[in-house]
Image (cartoon, rainbow, N blue to C red):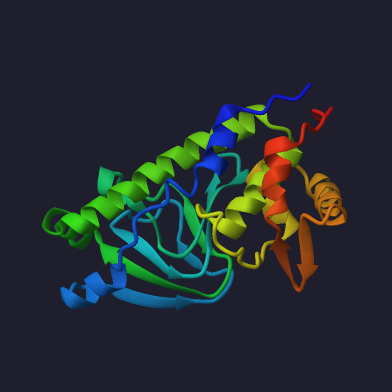
Length: 236
């Protein structure tokens, strides 16, 4: 008998309701003549390293990045994947002197770097931006909690399905999916299983018509129904 936690179902069904309000971050930065740096990255470039000084926050204008942590024993884990209109490096705002994770691009990206003092000033001076940033942080916290529940209670098949849905749709399942460019090694590290298991589940999803391969991975909305209704066996 498999256990399907309420958090996973509530997250997917209510994702559209919890969508962050629209806000033109680039418009704000331009209009207020705020000091910021825009950088273009190619795939697999480092944005910042674990252990670097935590002196700024980054806004992802275009592209996707992965957040990884390396243990003292050298074991690496992917803890998050973030995309357009998301922030990373927010730990700089809580007084942490060093980065707790490494951020690496998964595609070509345009990323805005904001000094700590700059973003603190914007939060104090612009109520709309402060509301937007707070919603971002609350959404991030809810996602982390859902990730933990997913890892604790769901079998690998469901963890992979959820990860694919979030990569393709973000928090709005009313939109058309975006093509996902991610390899099986990354997916395995993200959901905490082996590449062979990911390959097995991906082949199953493809045969069921839930995903398509066409140069890039295309995730169909039918995968959402699979997550909510399927009762897979628990892996042994």
